[in-house]
Image (cartoon, rainbow, N blue to C red; front, side):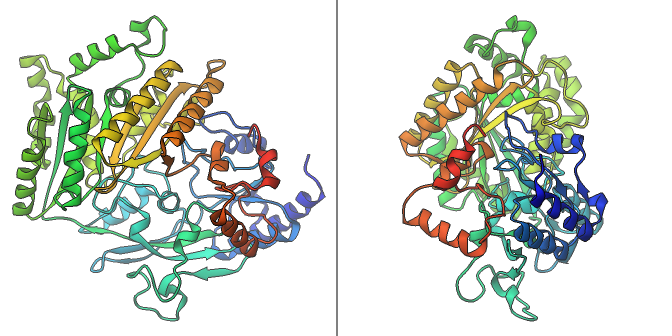
Length: 543
């Protein structure tokens, strides 16, 4: 039941936004209360402002009536919570109508956007201008928000893969309705505002990433000039033991600058889920997929225990030299290493059928996975990776994939580990042991964010329509978190089910609480997001 404060707030929001943009219809509320794992948070309303001024007014009203708001940009934070707020009885501040591209500079390679601007929208914008600039894309939906991913410290594939490191000039609305600008943007007529991260004095940008201190309504994103030459490389390891040596070699190539972009390594379960759904007909309904059947699929599809990819960017001579160094570094450590450019990809697509007829190798299946990945290395968004969320569903993914709506189970666990072969092997073994024991396929990807650290993203995929699977999947997630923390590894990003993990009763945590009290005295903005005080922790149990 909505109390008097909520009724007064809804009346004020309707007066500010218009009734059609204050949504309380049960079906719409049910959609934003649903994600890819079990949650209990309720949402009384969805607010859809269309400007920074309307965002300010929404927050002023929330502060006045002391009712909580949870901002989302596109709501496609699949695997981490989608649109579900971190606390119950919290209204959604839907920023998708703020969808303008505000500024663009081809020469200095930047674009300034609002939170509703999606990967697909920016790609279409660049294409329409025949721009020589590339964006960096994630494997998330093409219709996911650029700002939303950046503020979660997401990453992609190109040399600009660290999204937060390639952003600046934030416009932020504080919970009280005040607006601040970061870097040089706070000065009048600052010509370097979209070009320099730090500005003058203390840098505040980081305070607004993975926090609940403000709502970002504008951001400048740096774009990458298209290189004179681009090639992708792909490799395969047929033995588990090869992982350590490959990680060591790639780490050194990254540290020395031979590799400029992120390098992604996925295990066989991860690759198989990108190609097809669970083979129910071959398993008789049993889960998880057995090691014997996984080995048979590796042979049938010609995939490795580990498969990796990366991009080479520069002049033809620079790319040729990088190719030579990669060959030398991976010699004897991988079973196959191939380089691909636009011409070879075109030929492969053209001759896939004759190759299958001559050799029996269904190259088209390999290209189903390689072609979207090749595009990501050039900054082209794709919806292909979303299909893996349907791994355990018994019906094919629809054309308009929506894991929340379709009952897909997906939990992501994302610890960051040192980029050493020994630690990569140890973490892999721990993850595989836990997940197989808990009845799930250990889908693992390792991304060398730089030469020093690896982001290990683990997918727990299941079918939410099967009774008891939500509980089993969450138990598996907890087991992974506990083991990783014992080993000294912590996540780079959290879902709404585990925001309390960020809380530590130390001087750092105390400073964060003081800052929160200062910028949000009424405690209305995304309560519980990347925080959990003693006052709120008990209230979140079971949420």
